[in-house]
Image (tube, rainbow, N blue to C red; front, side, top):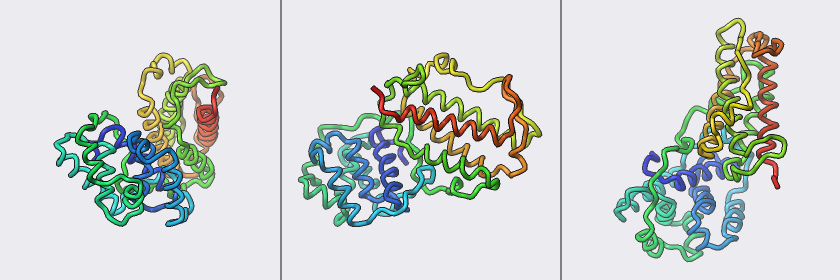
Amino acid sequence: MFDRYTEKARRVIFFARYEASVFGSPHIETEHLLLGLMREDSGLKARLGSMAAEEFRKEVEEYSPPRQKISTSVDLPLSHECKRALTYAAEESEALNQKFIGPGHLVLGLLRIDGTLAATFLIKRGVNQGNYREIMRTTPADPPERMPVPSTEPAEPQESRPPKAAALADPIATLNLLLDREIAQLDPDQRLKRKPWSRKEAMGHLVDLAAAHHQWLARGLVEPRIGAAVYPQEEWVAAQQYADYGWRELVSLWLLLNRLVIHVLTVIPEEKLNTSCRIGVDEPRTLREVVRRYVAECEDLVGQIMAKLE
């Protein structure tokens, strides 16, 4: 569905999904799409003014008071109106003979749905189909990059199921909270205070940890004991040159790997938690202890990434 979307347009969808989760909405609505646009479309932000996002957020809160936040690990579907807006965005791109769909086409798509909070707010601020279409004639969208954002299509919310092992409920809840953190918007090159890494390099280590633990959890389901040559090493970060890899790709990979880890955790039966795991030269631990260590290390490193750095 998003093959023709530019990187910025894809990020708009990502942020719209995030906004929907913050408001506790069961669907991604057109107002969430506009909030996503206000994050990513610098031209729109300049046209609307610096306080527009805050003012529109208040309007949305008055119209539909926020409910309990929904975890970002649960996929949310697009509402009917939001799907129409995306369809109209594609039509606008084709009508302008532009190959790709960018944030500006999404704005035009929103403007074609009369009576919504999003369209009404834009029109009040002087943004209408005529003047914005003219802008888009002279500013074609950049081609999309290869990395897609997480899907917004309906999917089984497997992560929300209670785990078979009650002892894993707290680790799963903690991981879900970590996945809710707004990491992607941070400066990836800022250095950590307690590690010799940039945020990007620290995220690379988190990816290594997630990949290794997923394999160990899978083996724990079918093997009587687990042995591994080594725990993911800090020197792997430099060896793999994570500093030169894409920041958003690393963040997306970490999110997806941990959603898979969470899914596997939900299906581990209680009796498997005592499976013996020997990793490297460490003393054997139970699978329960391996999970706790993983979650604690993720908490610590995500906390360092999220910290305000000088």
